[in-house]
Length: 188
Length: 276
Image (cartoon, rainbow over all chains, first blue to last red; front, side):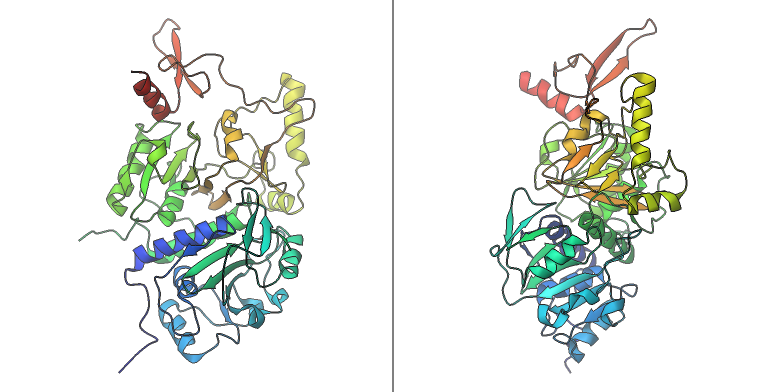
């Protein structure tokens, strides 16, 4: 009997979560830098990096939205077994997982309130490629300029305009991970 | 068998702290509320910094802990031993060798690098708290970016003392948005808040975490006609002769004799080693 929904979690829970968080922290603190994160083996179509992020950050207190690209029984069961995260609609989500097209329109996600800007969603965007080229980035965490292959430009410019409100993004592709906080200034 | 989970905290707690840290990084200078835990040390002894460090540590880290710049004071020694015991991480007193530095009230003299994380212990994270005791009101003031009260306070300093008399915990504005308490570091250290290292701040009793990402703009509040002055005691270090370091005044007898020495013990010791 194979039980894919039970396999592929962290082999060493506390150490793997620590390494995964450190990668996630560096990615969010330094937009344009790509971290490697290959500690989890989630069912398709979820990437290793996205799987590790979910194992590291999600639990029963973090509602998760699975976009149509990723709303599949195997992945649902895997996430439920390993994290107990409730699967919810986009408006109620603290985390969201999917391809950019499937997550769009992204203005459905929580952007926090002026008193509590931390109450905003984190989007985990699965990419077919992820590289340090393309859109030009400035802002906190970036020395002069950085580049990252974003799925589009306008949505991130709109997001920046609402600072300090806005959603934060991780981009994942295989075992590669990059971050884009709401404060990043994105130029074409 | 080791009786502790890695870095003491349980995984559920670390996830909660990690999520708060990430939101702090995403909104530089904004104080993210978190469910601070009881730690096996009293509030005021760095429980906030300890929780942030515990959430960030990986087994390969090399940890340095300083208290007012010194590696060998009670607070620093206890916290260093705590993580040696609960996380089995390597420790060091050398600023350049550390991957994570937990600090109480100083920024090391040696410039931090991209590969390092600086974790501050924070007593009162709210820069407006002594001006406005109500959390409801200060939260509103941050939301509205209403920092007039802080400028009035600095102005009153000038009216009374002829200069801005705030010497530590000197308020800064982060990335042009949030006014932030950099913890009670001397204002001498404020220019070093613009760093290539990631800086994380943990306040345990007050249950707040905040962050300054690398290369973030951090401006000390001032006035055009009273610009910010980091200032230091007009002496060289009595031990290593450094003219550029922050100095502690040490009373040496009952007759009023005193000497000025580097507050950063590693900086002072390595300068003396180099000279020898």
